[in-house]
Length: 263
Image (cartoon, rainbow, N blue to C red):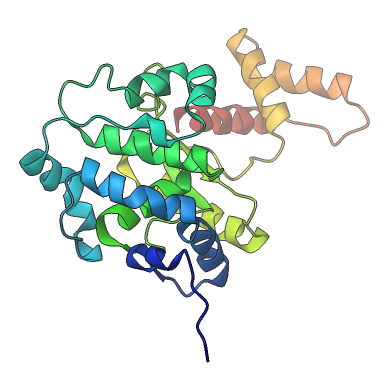
């Protein structure tokens, strides 16, 4: 049988090994990493970042800590290979400044991060593809260790270029997120709030106190100097269709509210 000549056969040399048992993740990853335009970027990307030999996937975490410091001092991103640079420059000017190296005196992981985000924009993919792009460039293998279309995480807005602020927990979703995945990440978010020291400053009163509106009103009446009997009598006069309150009820309610304020 005669084999038809395939002008894309050379792409086999750059094929990315995809390792995930999740079929939805597999499809999302494959439909980026099998794009000829992406695979054609790899030789230039690997040359830019000084990759002569691919790394084991297990070493990906060490790369930003050691590899860059030992092997690279400066990097210039070749923006000519991207078709949407002008859009990025117009829509995200601060991000564009990173791409051209402005404000970066030494090579730092931020440069790789910036280019990986540009690749996401180039191929219409969200930022949760950034870490798999690292893997593809450095290892030729991607898995779902960092591929999180649905994820509960602590967000530091200061690191995102905002003003200094306390951290918050957010649940990130994508078009492929399912209700069950969001529920699972909600459970994880609750665990983060409970167990992460950086979130320990916030202790919400989860269990609603009964009659909380009444307790607050009576608390402020007490602050104004009224006795517990006055508070109860005036409440009964205004709410004669409800169960009457005694001065003991008012005292207990105010003390309960004060405990809630102290928590």
